[in-house]
Image (cartoon, rainbow, N blue to C red; front, side, top):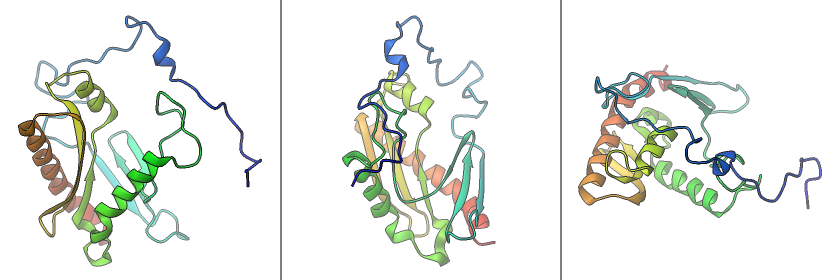
Length: 194
């Protein structure tokens, strides 16, 4: 049954950047500046500043608020692309790719959903700028890796790699993801256990 209360947008839409000439598109600066730091001032091995708060909504058990640098959001197990986030507009209902991502999140974290051990799982994903730089070939590899790691079991439960990467680059990316997860573990444990 259709939902007539929703605003029915066009069937297709395109990101305005698609129509820009190459000279008008915003440039992608190098990943590191002359001092060896990222654009936001972090060293290559540093993770973004993080802020976490649980109990955001008293009517929804398990609600949380997380900020990773300028990235903010509420954590749920449903995955959905924003309609404007892709070259081709996404519908308000989950499509097959989004359902796949949702099932990957559930599959990866299902072993970690034990209230006693909440601080032992981390999901690390690169920022949009980092993905674009990799996609444009800065740094050699043309792909990115999402790593889900259970530090209490010292086990990687899920790896999702897209794009092209050499096996050595893939292993380095997985190791960097694990290292980032271990750095986040203590902060997550402090927030979730208080």
